[in-house]
Image (cartoon, rainbow, N blue to C red; front, side):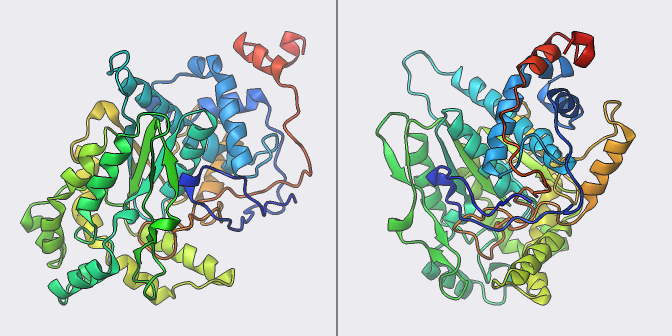
Amino acid sequence: MQDNSTCCNTAASNDCRLGPLYSVFPTKRAEVSSVQDLYEFISSGPLLSKLGLTPEKVAESIDKWLAYGLQLCRLFQLNDLYLTVPQKARLYHYYIPVFIWCEDQISQHRSTFKDGEDISPLVIGFSAPQGCGKTTLVFALDYLFQVTGKKAATVSIDDFYLTAEGQAKLREENPGNALLEFRGNAGSHDLPFSVETLTALTKLTKEGMKMKLPRYDKSAYNGRGDRADPSTWPEVEGPLTVILLEGWMLGFKPSPIEVVKAVDLQLETVNKNLEAYYDAWDKFIKAWIVIKINDPSCVYQWRLQAEIAMREAGKSGMSDEEVNDFVSRYLPAYKAYLPTLYSEGPNGSDPKHLLVIEIDEGRNPILERLVTHSKDEYDLLHEARGMDDWILYRRVWASATKDGDDDISGSGIAIDNEHEGGSSCLNRDTEMANLRFGCSGSACGA
């Protein structure tokens, strides 16, 4: 089993720290992944149609797919020649297609500016429930942007929480409201600070322009949290190409009062607070990625997995009862706002700049049986995707502790590789040429 205990350096904006990685299939050997294998696997992906891609277009750009895959394998310490089906699915069915969509959105955005005009960075919003893996998705995208020469800044809505003093005032103003007792719901964020930060980021259009990205210390005040000391904030430098803004409640729209009261009477104040969030966050976002789930109760299971794994690793973690109490403070908002988010899109979004990805309980895009899947591969993929913990554990962001957007579980890539060494030195030029010319193996004299 190869050693996966170290993490390669990434941009400061990722703000990551190391975390252990666990194998899901410790006794199952991964098979060598040829270019033809990967091409067929990529062509079966559930997101291709959403991107307007066909197998022919994939073949034309297969070298780009392989290059992106190699970079992500380096990031997550995977052997690119020996990928398990779950590993291939996470990279080639999810992360890379989303990155390609983001690249296209950036191209469209930049084309709207005239020659010589300062080009503001595109703000891409990621709206996804806690624990579904969005933090790791954004982490991977940020890395791909950096290695392809595009400057990116990553910000979470967690970074805009009220200070400890502001939270205390919020509790005092809403006695008995469990939804506003702790940070998380609408009303617990410093919206003027959000506007100030996002406005400044969008103005980083020239070389030498710098600013620090705010961070939140969730461990302060016995877990109630406080804004981190500015001296610890990471710095970004222009010109920025893209800003990645992620959060569990991005794009939520206020609901009719009768809908809100039917869900939870305590949600009425939260709903009123939500009216100010479009101007603070959503209006900055020009392209949206929405991660859709069928049942919000998945959030509880994902969070429970995270805490159990933390406890087993010897770290402080919430008990099952504490997890239930924690998640219960978010479920009313999910019940009230997710239906509209999924049916109408985020607040102020344009369908031409919106990517909706429905995921299963394994945090993977929903897969349909396609003719390009063999039955064995299809069954194996669904078996893997049905397992609870096939991708534990990852590089946790330095700011992550115990909050609604921590994404602790589902954020790494499992290692199932018994092949020591196995570097990326295999010459694939012939395979790539064969693929482009529509032949492979002995048919091309290889």
